[in-house]
Image 1 (cartoon, rainbow, N blue to C red):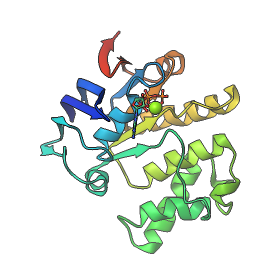
Image 2 (cartoon, rainbow, N blue to C red):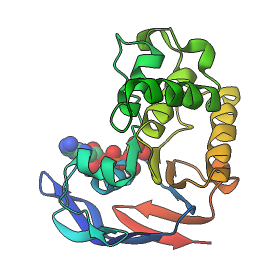
Image 3 (cartoon, rainbow, N blue to C red):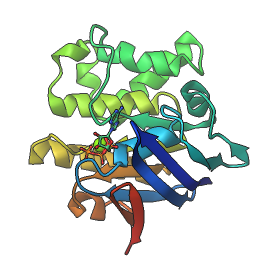
Length: 215
Ligand SMILES: Nc1ncnc2c1ncn2[C@@H]1O[C@H](COP(=O)(O)OP(=O)(O)OP(=O)(O)O)[C@@H](O)[C@H]1O
Ligand SMILES: [Mg+2]
């Protein structure tokens, strides 16, 4: 469904992503682990259309999406959830998710879908709270909720378990496992493999910008 072919990206004359290839099938979950600065976030941002690659191709279904704008990539069905959550801080949790739902639906339908997403992620009790007042764990869940609101087929989750204590990391893990059961294809990055092991179907390690398949 998603094919990344020989993608490279340099920033300030430094190669950050080096000739990366990967394939993701419908409903498949790939875990990418690797140390700080190995290029994981940059790779996901390239796939999401946030950063343009220097060379290589990204094909989604039958469409070459390599040079589409991020909004167009979202519309095609690929959405990136930032490592450091980026909500609209002065808006409520509900409004943050509603914004995405309005991309595809009328106000009435968007409201219903927003409620469904908040319920699915277990944050419906936070609906009226301002994003700026959320805890770290709640922010991670809101970031995933915002991504879901665009109705993606592929979710790119960048370190969804990082910067959390164990209890919150396990809460996010359980929600991500539910999303997998719902059939979302995902690429999930993490520093370590342990939680990824419980979720992903395939694994790869990023080192110095290169991606190596692991079993
Ligand atoms: N916009 C930028 N300008 C300059 N350097 C950048 C930029 N974005 C990324 N880099 C550099 O590229 C390298 C890879 O960064 P990236 O964030 O992709 O790694 P990562 O594997 O996600 O790291 P982490 O595990 O810390 O999240 C780092 O050395 C980083 O400093
Ligand atoms: Mg990163």
